Length: 412
Image (cartoon, rainbow, N blue to C red; front, side):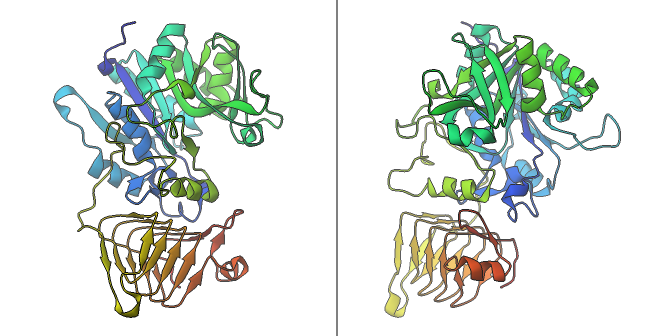
């Protein structure tokens, strides 16, 4: 099968999510701009997958608190214009009246001019806030093979978790027979009663099908104007929707342990656990795959440094990520992710935690199971993450799973 020229493919990345369940990390930034893994932003994973696959005409549809996201895109995602490649941020332009996007489908509808300008044959529509590696070309090949109007990337999850997703029921040939958004009674797979097939939030559309679908949706009373909740069920009813099983995707350099890895980081607990997936000796998600790299902005900073201090010596570091500019002075760091310019002073202990850029941990402080946003100074001797009740009394956010989160610039 001959695949279309990548120049005839447009990619739309939906980055307008408010991310309320990730508060306080989304208090000052859009969800796709939330830092991850030390030096990355969440949106870097979707963009890297598209770019590695050869699809380099990308529009990013933004909305809420998009400043830091726009800065990141401008500083990082610069493509050579010689071949017409680009990654560009598109804010809500209010082309259909003085209103924000009403949903992801409405975001596409309000930007149909972008499709008119490019005249692509097919369109990738990807979410901006998941952690995974995926070769989109294999999904596109499946889309062309079936002649689908839309192909939905899907992954198997336990039945107990499926209620949080769009659940897919498919025929043996891949045609989707039912698509239910966040059902109370998700139906398991016929060959696997313990798992359901759920949408990953990634789609490939035939251009005419997408344009027709968003126009119909714009006129439909009672629609939430959501791609997964409204467009896909409509196309399922028309027999135009097919599923692509993500477990079939093969990415260069991905180990069997990592195969099929995908994480929705929509809550503090899921975000925290995805960071913890990075720091084991044999990580479930490997950032060090040179054959399918995750691209991001490189902070201009010196290499990380470990300093011996008095009776603490060099401290101890194990199973952790240390970004550029990090300085550990007689500190004890285990199973943690430290972003650029973090400082941890003598005798301080940081365990199973994520520290954002320019966090300063004072001498003797003890931090556990925490996510601390940018520019926070933890005073000497301060204890965080050891007593949830005390943490709540101090105004910290404590998740259902016991993760403590401190907001950007929070003063202790």
